[in-house]
Length: 274
Image (cartoon, rainbow, N blue to C red; front, side, top):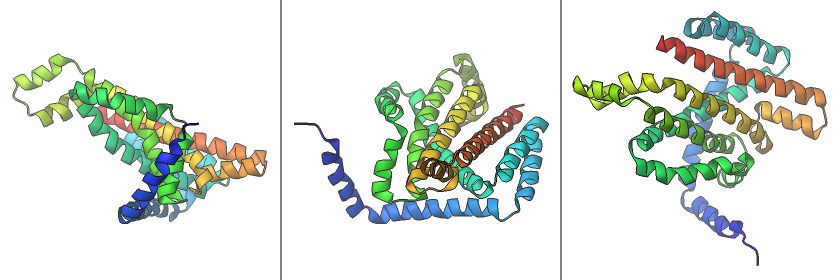
C-alpha cells in the first residue's frame, strides 16, 4: 500500500472549487484587470519611446549607469524581436513581486517581533522552499484553470519565503540601542519602525527583494508551460520545436529583464536612502 497525497488533496480542491468559486473568480478578475492594465500601459507606447522613458526615469531615480543599463536591456529585448513577450513577462513579475512583498513584509516584521510566530512559520517556509517550483503550478491550475492567473498565484507563493525570511532577519538585526534611543525621545512605534528600523534594515531588505525578483522570474518561465505567455512561452516553444535560436534569444531576454528589474529597484532604493 502506497501513500498517495493526491487522494486526500483532490477532494479538498473539489470542495474549494464548489464552495469558493465566486471568490476565486473575483481574485482572477482582479489579477487579470491589473495585469492587463500594466501590459496595455507598456505596449501602448512604441518600443523606442518606452526605452527612452525608462532610461530617463532610471537616470533620475537611480543614476546614469542604471539608466544606460536599462536602455541596453530593453534595447536587446526589442532587437531580439521579443518586445511583446518581454513586456508581458515584466508585467507578470511586477504584479507577482508587489503582491509577494505586500504579504511577506508585514509577516516578516511580525515574526521579528514574536519568536512564537517565527517558530510557527519556519517549518512552513522550509517546505515552501524545498518543494520544486513547478509543483506549485498543479494546485493553482486545478483552482484557476490554465492561463496567467495560476502563473501569478504560483509565482507569489514561490516568492514569499525568501522575502519573509530576510525581512525577519533584517529587523531582528537592527541594533537595540537605536530602538531604545527612539523610545527615549518619545517616538511612537510607527515612527520608530519607518524612521529608525527600516533604514537600518534596508541592506538586508534589498537582498530579499533581489531574491524575490529573481525567483519570480524563474517561476514565470516555468509558468509558460500553463499558458502564461511572455518569455516563458517562447522558451517552451523553443524547447518543443528544438529551435535553439529562439530558446537562446528568449533565455538572454530573461537575463536582460532580470538585470533591468534588479538594478532598477536596487538603484532607486539606494539613491532614496542617500
